[in-house]
Image 1 (cartoon, protein in one colour):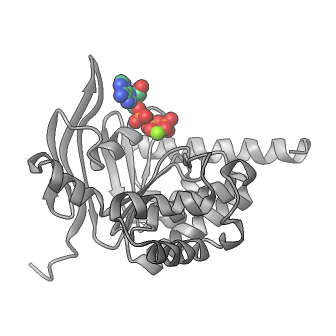
Image 2 (cartoon, rainbow, N blue to C red):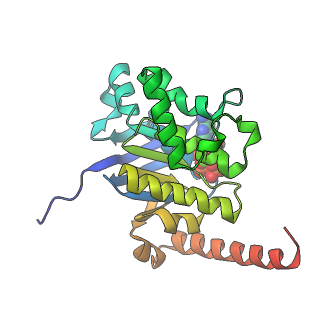
Image 3 (cartoon, rainbow, N blue to C red):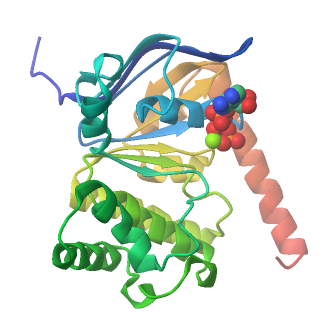
Length: 264
Ligand SMILES: Nc1ncnc2c1ncn2[C@@H]1O[C@H](COP(=O)(O)OP(=O)(O)OP(=O)(O)O)[C@@H](O)[C@H]1O
Ligand SMILES: [Mg+2]
């Protein structure tokens, strides 16, 4: 049956997750092949962050299987789970740097905490990570002194400093203006090219999804209702995809007209 494709880096099979009597995920299946970027779309509250926490092992599914780099998380003990989690670089929603640490020390944190590298190597790797996101000049600044776009880039440097093979981004462009969104998108594209990492980019923003995704998926009413290459996704006949793309175009049009009548 032809060439075997790349191996899946992330695999969710019929995953269910409820909180009390609220069902959030009701049979999610999603496979992200190694080295590709999947953009996951979904409205607010659809369960995108819950899905990310399942992949990171912060939450356990009620039913179904979550595999990272081929390993079924439910079968791993604490030590092995920690080993698998080290393959993940995570950019949490909201970024969350430590306010009391400089940018340098924030980025150094995973190296000191998890890898326990000698200080000379720490310095070298932090310098490299900051250079990748063009933040060397801000190394000694504190998060409170940075712009929103710089904060995201610093958070990215921290997420990738352990050179993860899988990157998870939760809503990385939230609250950023178009220029800062651009610079974060550039950083994600760079992450893909330079680290050859597999990425899952969670976003409610269709433009970002089309820019970074090799394939796009829509989470709707607890399931992945479409998962396809950009062109096929754009042409999907699924009503939820049509509605999602339509709403986004309308919001963008409204935004454009309010921008032209009022200065922003
Ligand atoms: N630990 C939890 N306990 C109870 N309910 C939770 C918990 N975590 C998430 N939920 C609920 O699950 C649903 C999905 O939440 P989630 O954070 O995954 O949404 P989201 O798609 O990431 O939304 P957004 O785009 O606003 O970030 C929400 O109704 C939320 O209240
Ligand atoms: Mg979320």
